Image 1 (cartoon, rainbow over the protein chains, first blue to last red):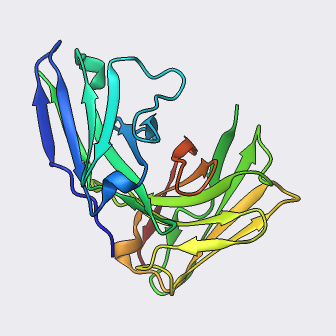
Image 2: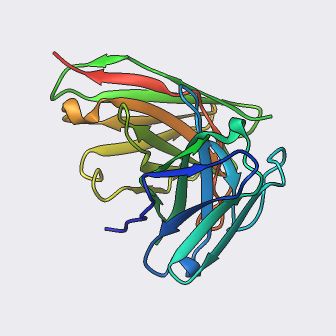
Length: 106
Length: 119
């Protein structure tokens, strides 16, 4: 089975840059997506095809993917960015999610 | 704007079959791919499987022996059946859309429905 590995938690001070990593076998050869989930809400896609932001997602969100690691970067993190973040990729048409990272902004 | 709405029983007995339906509005189910995803309480997301309007499906290998996803294009709905459930199948179940395979993420989600497996 395929696995994507994320750190359980990341902390960042308001206005600073947060980076959340996602590791997987040859992940750089696939497209990575990222989802933000706030308590009691459905996930929202914040990045797709490694680096593309859906309409309505702030420019402070950016992404990269190379080798075995995809990274979601939040530049100038705000209190509203505090949430769980999940990476996701397709391995042979099988969807795989990372375990999730809790981002704390304090 | 596409909207997805899950419906079905919130309580299922162990060993029975969990059945949910996702109703799609604002988009034709005859385009795009449609997936089921679940999230046990306090845990992460798990992809269950997808269906294309043609009936083509693919399932998570860990659930494949117990899952069937079907589509009803006339009603613009797709459904999930998960048999032989146990307490570990207790989760919020989401339906979601993705415009393609491999290149696309889940760009629209339902609100989710909590299904509890208990006698």
